[in-house]
Amino acid sequence: MVITVASDPANGNTARQRPDSIYIRQPTNRMGVVLAAPQHVRQANRQQSSDLAVVREALAGKRRIYAVSRTDHDLLSLLRLAKEFKFTPTVIGGQEAYKVNEELVAAKVPVILGPLTTSPSGTGPKTAKWCGTSPGLLHKAGRHLRALRRPPARPGPVRGSLRAAGGRRAGSDHAHGPARLLGLENRVGTIEAGRDADLLALDGDPLELTTSIQWILVDGTIHEKGK
Image 1 (cartoon, rainbow, N blue to C red):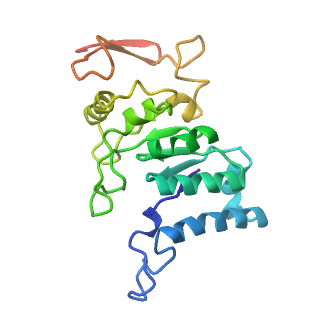
Image 2: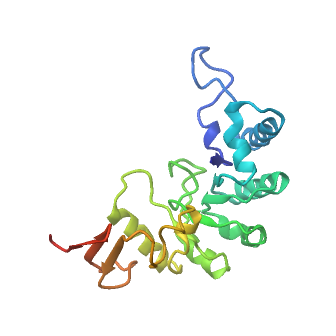
Image 3: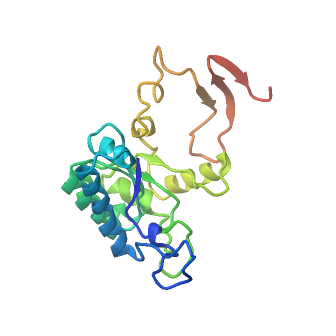
């Protein structure tokens, strides 16, 4: 289950606009987002309606909870929510996680670092902050970077590799545990008997831009370069 403890759900919302507009709805600001999340959780605990079944399953530990939070204020709000309702989220975004490193470590909350700006669009006065040094700061602070998320816009291996390499040059190490973060550690993530036989052979460090693919193994079949 994915939740958002950030300003995203309030974008464009208003209480004073055309009556037929879909944007006349709550919440209308960041504070409203922070207040709305606990209300839905409490409602799920009180009611047994099928509409809130997913929320109840997540709170019971039957589903993983991924939380989109970027700034230090949003991350602290997420940690308060997680403590109140006794769940451990996985942060998606986390560009300012290094500012609240001690709190994240104490709560044992992993981070999937997203595109290196503090907003979904990366534009505007509050959202143009560049967080290119976040991977290195997280790593040096002891909050070992667990995974790098590919940007949703214009996806592709080159764009993802450039961002990963940029994070490496900013001081981070290799990402750790993406299979565990996705709940797929029993299938992928290590080379063992019984795991999915999908492998990638490279001629150098995966995060170096000069590294090339030599062959790939898909479902046990090797596909060599150029074939």
